[in-house]
Amino acid sequence: MRPEKRPRLAHETEKHRWDRNFADLLQELRVAQTGVQILFAFLLTLPFSNGFPKVSALQRDLYVVALLSAAAAAAMLISPVAFHRALFRQGRKPELVRYAHRMVTGGLAFLLISMVSSIFLIVDYLLSRWVAIVLGTLAAVWFLVFWAGIPFYRHNWIDEADELEDKALNDDGPSPSGPAA
Figure 1 (cartoon, rainbow, N blue to C red):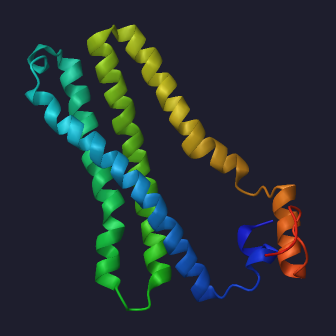
Figure 2: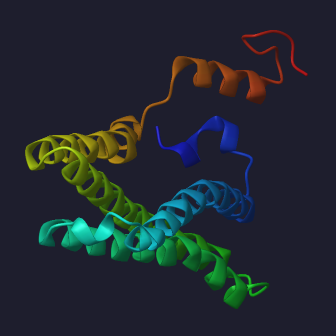
């Protein structure tokens, strides 16, 4: 069953749905923006450390990939804020939510590239190329499983507990955990 067809949301107006989607998106952005900004700040300071001149050509290239992809992630994750400012009070929240969704998805893709490149770079510098390849690959798979695989797999699932809660909310009866509040 699709989320917008769930009984719990049957009473929700189109405007309320867009407002809720936007509020949810803002909460997600707060987490992602903080993470990318910390990573970006770390990468900006790296060339000024004492050991940086000793990096190989591959490590320098990996650093550039990590830095530029972190910058791209920051730009894409922050862009919904600028877009919101431009559309403020114009009644175009559906357009804003659709745009922000695309920007956040792209920003997370660039963040994935930056994080995996950073892991590869640091492990290659500290240990060895083969360990970096293995750990970089494992990190990429790990992120993809949690950021894409599980959400895609769970996309249309509704747990039995959710269905009971929906029924209780719509019947104005007691919930599975006790009387209604």
